[in-house]
Amino acid sequence: MVENSPFMSEESTKNQVCVIIGASHAGVNCAFALRKEGWSGDIVLLDADPALPYHRPPLSKAYLSGDGNIEGHQLKGVDSYQKENIMLHLGIRVISINRSDKTVTLSDGKIQPYHRLVLATGAIPLIPPIPGIDAAPNLFPLRTLADTDYIREALRNSTQKRVVIIGGGYIGLETAASLKKLGATVTVLELQERVLARVTAPEMSEFFQTLHAKNGVEVLTDKAVSSIEPQDQVTIVVCADGSRYQADVVVVGCGIRVNIELAEQADLEIENGIRVDATARTSDDNIFAIGDCTFHHNPHYNRFIRLESVQNAVDQAKVAAAAICGKETTYDTIPWFWSDQYDVKLQMVGLSTGYDQTVVRKEEGESIKFSVWYFKSDTLLAVDAVNNAKAYVLGTRFIKDGKKIDQAKLSDPSADFKPGNLLVQ
Image (cartoon, rainbow, N blue to C red; front, side):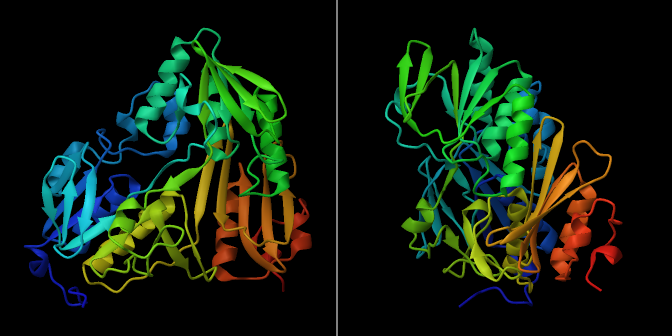
């Protein structure tokens, strides 16, 4: 029986406690959204990271290549948590969840009760089982503030500044661009036949591989790393084809592993993440889950998905907060993402999975300004826009409205790039 109802008032939550595990984008936004929705009881926000919660996207971009000042990248200032009476506990891990008693056990031995619990546990970097990887000096993932600081320090202390990045996804490529700005010699080793193969079309993969080559980054595909050989302070990255690469710093960007251990221990429903309904509620009525760790239904694409994006984390946080406060709400949004590399901004909207054709639109007179439109038959699924905010905005509008697009006009750079002209009449 769910205790919340559409008629909950601030007074009814006054003596209740909402505990949020995880203080990244999802957890922090949920805490503040709870106050906005009228939660008057205690809010306890827990995170194992000792740093004041920060934006993660800049870690592989502006923060990594900048001056290392994290203050400009913090999600909220200390005074904001105090003003909203949000009890922020950092450097604390949650060991277990007791659903019967409605308590969580903390790493310092304390028992924290809850009336509502929110899991915003996110994910950790996937470290592949490559022989020698555990013994390699100056080898790092890139997920946390500490990871980025370690990479910067290792590069600063190296003589030749040779960096090998294992993985040619967005994190790997963004890190490559940032480290190149810091004067590093960068080699990217990608297992697949092209970079970004899992998330984008061949045209976009070719563009980014060429972009990095023009900026002096060596991007090599079909490279399966077979072993890592530490030699003093130098690391040799060995590939299955026999090629060997010397590195002063190695960055591993091979994807993530979702943090579902607590949910599994609590016997919540798991399916490619923590399965939640349209209100972000798990299989336990009093426990919600939000962000990277969730497997949720997207109404527009009519399928369950797991998204690794700030947008999804923030949107689910708001939905969960409203639902916890007894308000009728459901998750219904078009996913969007972005990536910054050198002077290129890539904006993506929608999910291209299942596309059977693409249309590439290049703007007249523009050196680097184009978009890739993904279709399944005549239905627009997604748009990737390079230095082209208009294409991103129009793509978002067309996907939401479900309107049919004249693909011939779309591909014609001389055709007027306006909704009325591009839609099938």
